Length: 282
Image (cartoon, rainbow, N blue to C red; front, side, top):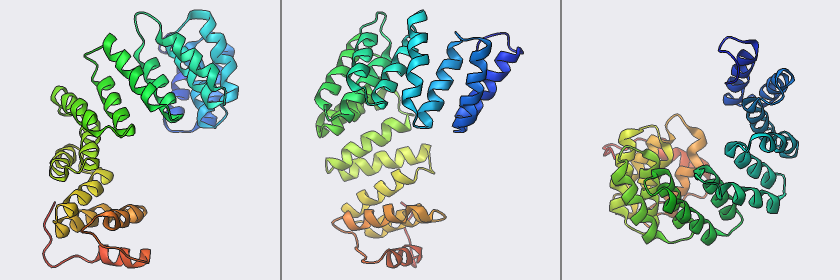
């Protein structure tokens, strides 16, 4: 944060940051605007203001302060956020051009590559997005985050074999990363490697037991392996205390070749709320 730790500006920015983290976007915007009145060049205030405006779906209003800040000091974080904001404001060509300029910086600023790849993938240009992440990896081959991004892009490009290879390597480097484990498990599930996917999901759930999406996907794997009782037990754990997960649980049952289909959501809910006599913990 700018200014001395106990200065009025630093306190104002701290309050704005906390409001932003709590998704109180209007409060964060007001506080950041007030901070900019005290110091119009404060980068933290500009970043908070831009993120708050994005949260309010007012991307166009974030362009001007970011452009001014980018011209002042050539900050790659500001430039990358500007590229994102331009794309969000339906100025995609300008946004992509800005991101390409920032990605061309040396030393490289890796988030610019990631943002550019994400924008390309969202526009359906997944092949170009894969190439962008591969280019970034040539500059930073030890980046596990880039390997994760590359694996995700391969999944989006329906190249499950490459995704599994990349994500398996990333897991070897960072075995405690649940985001890597769940992405690898999803690639394995899509590839029909249900036993491997189930093992990977179990590992992820051992690290983060409250991950309901992973447990629902584990249930799909178990049912595809013919372990219907264990799969349905997993879905009951997903639904317990979480009525909003009913559609996900019902979908998991309906899409499995060994699952069940219910015409009415109430029937699926009644079935999943009924504890079997002997349930195997997945």
